[in-house]
Image (cartoon, rainbow, N blue to C red; front, top):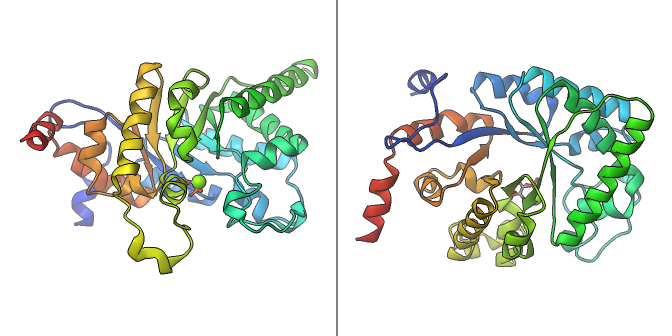
Length: 302
Ligand code: PEP
Ligand code: MG
């Protein structure tokens, strides 16, 4: 079976009736780059930058981060590398951040909320990302967005970072900037958010947690967890439609993106990209190559 999948390497992700979709890889460490190449990913759809913070006992410096992002950009040689800015808090804690203990960490100060309350940490990461963007096709993605105001605050900080790099005569690139849609608020106002950014990536792990009010780490709740809940699927559909209306693309980078029972459904919704663990890329390509989207849609109607 594995051999059969290997014959799919180098093939396009295109359905029988000619619809294309991007298949990207999720990585949590720079060491995963080899697996990304081996499995023929079209790019990296989610580079979780947390490991850089979690594997050290001090705030990673701009230089330390720059080297890692540059290596990812150069290894991928012109393919898109979407790097998500710091998403600690909730399940991922870092001692030297000295965060206050919270009653409800999943609803607490995490991800972009830390970055906006401690802009110096954020600026260091943004400087490293903008500098590394000069060496490949880096895109930056912001997690846990709930409002247009947050996006505007991010943009203001980005402008400051660019101005200071320019003033110092330091080279930087022009990365695409997108947001994760992983809160119900972001999904519902995705029409407005779409006007502010270059792309959306739907984080179904958190979107499901917050929509269904089910702690993603509490396995005791598994009997209540329906990953195919219509509320989630309708939100995905809505987000994709709103993205397209504004002329931007939308992908899925949460676990649901790799769910083979939904691949046809995602194609029918017009999802532009699926970002999954490297091992899921060729199995998904196989399904895509065997799918006729028009037929699938017609079959659903009757
Ligand atoms: C998600 O929430 O779906 C996601 C991709 O991000 P993480 O799993 O890192 O929270
Ligand atoms: Mg998430």
